[in-house]
Amino acid sequence: MNNMKLCPVNITNFKIDGGAMFGVVPKVLWEKNYPADKNNLCNWALRSLLIDTGSRIVLIDNGFGEKQSGKFMSRFHLNQNRGLENALEDLGYSATDITDMLITHLHYDHCGGGVKYNSRGTGFELTFPNATYWVGLSQWESAMNPNSREKDSFLRENLMPMKESGQMELIDNDRELLPGVSVRIFNGHTSGQLIPFIRKNGITIVFTADLIPSTAHIPLPYIMSYDMRPEETLREKESFLDEAERNGYILFFQHDLYNECCTLEKTSKGIRAGKTFSLLEKFTD
Image 1 (cartoon, helix red, strand yellow):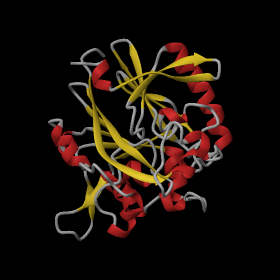
Image 2 (tube, one colour; image 1 turned 90 degrees about the vertical axis):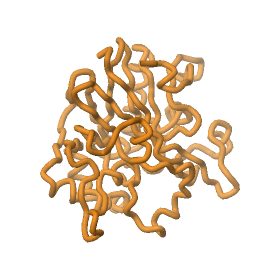
Image 3 (cartoon, helix red, strand yellow; image 1 turned 30 degrees about the horizontal axis):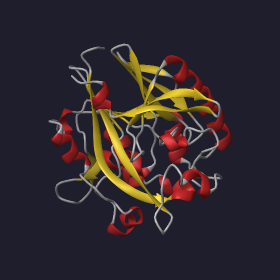
Image 4 (cartoon, one colour; image 1 turned 120 degrees about the vertical axis):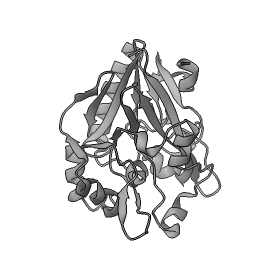
């Protein structure tokens, strides 16, 4: 779709442990590409992506939200925190404009902004009252029956208001969501993670979410400790990167502080980031 408008939504930056983000890879290797502070914390972006087709407005992921306690949020050292609704307003949109809220997965930094306190502070309501909330079926099932490793990532206050609203739709296979926007299911990081593929001007842009959080995670062994099935992540990454390099996809990173997008190229060490740029540099409407 050539008339499709793509808008990165910069919600906040946050800091978490570098070792957790790079898994078994030694710090002496990963810190060359992604620096840590004296407390071993790396600074990460938290971006969403808005897709305006003219008839529908899709938002991919929505950040932490504003309803968690100060104690909870203190773990993440937020900085450059614009907030989701303010970031949308900067782009000329409001929460009521969103027709489709596409949630890659239900970990709190990806879905917490989809639910907020009501005006009386007595309960919760949807942040996007006019939107269909799209979630992977197996991801929802995992969130309802979490394993002991993942259960702290699924917060009831983020999840149940979506279900109770009647506005949630579950996706159980790879499918087109609307013309120019499709989703595929990946299961290594967490069951039923939805990875959006967007087609504009003959080019495919992939919102990589937690399949590949940053350019530093492109090398195959660089897999987060947060991934539930790291060997499956390895297989998924290898297959996806081969396809993406072969077909000239653009990767849009949700968490890379330094690089919003990149192309891929083959090197003697395997597939690596090629050119890096912002999405608006590539598509100027």
